[in-house]
Structures are given as C-alpha cells and as structure tokens.
Length: 485
Image 1: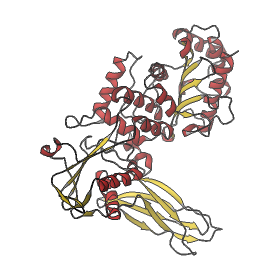
Image 2: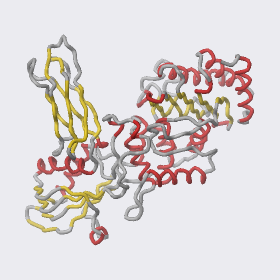
Image 3: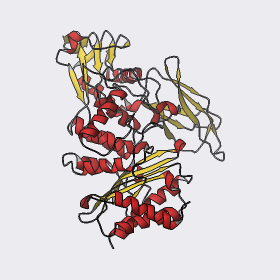
Image 4: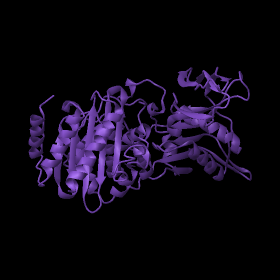
C-alpha cells in the first residue's frame, strides 16, 4: 500500500493529465483517494473516471486508461450503437409466407407455412399467444403441410463468446437464435401436493409440446422447509426439465426461469399447443429451412412487428438481459437475404462505429452483453461513450429512461436506498461473481445544469460485493458534496 501522500500525489498527477479545469477538481481527486485508502483498497484493482459533462472537465481518475472486465456495463455500448445504427424507430419483424392458399367459407387452408425470424428479442410467451391470435384472425384454420422455421437472419452459432465459460442452465445463459421466443427460457412453476408424501405439482410456461419433465420431488411437512432443485439439460434432441428434493406442505408456489437447450425447435414446440387451443389444425411436422427464394420475393402473407427498439433497450438495461443484448448485437450486422448477423461481424461494426465517432482509444468487444471474461474496456472509454450519448438529442431521452434509477427500479432498486443520491443516479451495473467484477457506470443528475458521467470498475478487489457497492456509493456522494460546496 502506498503512503497516503504518495497516493494522493499520483491522483493529482492523473488529474492534470486529463485536463482538469475547475478550481476544486483537486479536492474531488483528493477525497476519492482518501475513500479508497480508508476502505483499504488496492488501486490496481480499481478503475475510476468521473467527468463533469456540463463543464467538459474530468474531476477524478484512477487507472482511467487501464483495461478492465466491464461485465454488463458493456450493454451501454450495445444500446448506443443500436440506437445509432438501427434507428429509434427500428422494428424486428417476423414474416409469414405460404406456398398455397385455399379459401373456404370456414377460413383459409395453407399447405406449408413459413415463419421467418427477424431477431425479435421481445417475443415473449404472451406475444406468442398474440401472434397465433393474429394468424387466426387472418383466416388460417388448417395447415396441411409443414411448419417451416427460418432463423437464417443470424448465423447458426447459438453460444456467444464468453458464454461457454459458464455451463449452467440459468436463464442468463440462454441460446441465441433469430427466431426465439420467451428469451429462449422456460418458467418452471412448482407447488406442493395436497398431502404430505404426494408428488409436488410441476407446470411449465409456456406449454411446449416437445419438453420432457422428470420430477421426483415430494411434499413434506412444513417444519422441514425445503426448496426443490430444478434444472434443465439437453436430452435426445429436446430439453429435459428435472425436479428433485421436496417442498413443505404450506410453502407457496414459485417460478424458476431456466435455459432451453433448443433454438428454433423451441419456437415450434411452443406454437403447437397454441394452435390446438385456437382450433388451427396442423397436419404436418416442424422443420428447419429457408423460405424458398420464389416465395420470399412475394409480399408476406402476414408481418408481426416487435415492440419498439426502446422497449428492448429498457429490458436490457433495467433487468440486465444478456439475451436481449446479444440479439441486438447480432442484429447490428444482419441484413435480410444478404448477410447473416454474427458476433464477429458485429464486433467489426462496433469497432468501425467507435472510430467514426472519434471516441477515445479502442475497447475490446467480443459480445454485446459483457458475459464472460472476454470484453475489455477502460473507465475513460465508458465516460467518453456516455459523453457522446449525452449530446444525441434523438435518442438520449430513451437511453436515460431505460437506465436503472438508484433506489427506485431495475438492478439499482435495492441500492442507494438511504443515500441522498436516491433517484439522481441513472446507471448500468455489471456483475460477474466468478471473476470478481462489480462495475457501475452512468450519469449523476444534479438539480440545475450539472451532470456527471462516471465509470467505477472493481475487478478482483478482494472485498465483498457489498463493500464494492458501498465504496462506489461513497465516491459518488463525496463527489457531489465536494463539488457543491
């Protein structure tokens, strides 16, 4: 550990390099240094950059140009490029084609029904139900041939860079496909049986025709509080849901959201029960293939638009959805009928975007979510990005609204609750427990015209997650208290 005097001097030197202009910049730098010393943090594990956007002045730094694992702070970049590249009004469109239509008094009979995915990240189970309702309202009553699923808007790689480092069945590890539903996850609901020693009840949402369920869990007395062990795995071409253990007789039912081990197959498996409930007769089989070129040039039978892009960014920020981030990321490089979206192509596009906008340095971005130990950015990179976004009047309101608000919602709902900064911090968190990453970056919005952009990275500090959080909170609080004196 450096002596305090040497430590603070190094901080002051760094401030000079970043062109600090305000009279009290040194005071903020000094205060941040004292917080780090008092909490016994090694500076090598920290990256800090705080910039007063309203005055174009950097007021505190620590390893601001060093490269760190940003975790989900990566999503800040994914959103900015998506808004810039795709446009605020972009819609992900799922298109329906047919090769034969027979009109009857009772409705329409088609031979093969083709569903062409457009990378829609918000195709929830509820919207899948709406999709089938729309097909019914378009007149479809019978499909005598096959249901052909076209997911070739993206390439066939379903596991992104960094995702293979964690092989769990958790929902944050879901597979990526241009024709996906419900974030490629299934909700497993478990509740106790009516009597002790009877099996617990297991229900799936959405209902899927191809899934297998193997449950050995039983109901036990209330005094033995238990939670069943629930998992999914790939088994003979489908997803196997396993439930083990026990539940107390009076325990409330609960949901577990888990990864599906299929891509386009899962979409089809979820459609069939909805077809049956709506009275759409399906006589063929689910297949995987492209819409034939002779048919793809026709006007689609029906088009199902997504929610606005802003809704996808909101979900990606508030709930730190890895699935949404990677769907957006691959969409960046996808062009219908010309080029398939891929992680490599999107990486190149992001690099080009960064250069074209004259942002400082060059981050290392391999995926859009920050999953794994693959992305590297500096605090200065993120603050430069946030400063750029602040000047984009077309999408700044949507970007700001999507960020979690300290003590109010999203991943910051339970943070800053007792802080004077509650409601004033709009930021993206980044957490990777297996790599000791706890990051926070965003905006600090003060009354009046003062706005700060900040990035505080903690990589393997040797402290607990909660201690990292408190250190980040204290630094921002101290920044405000010094700056407003």
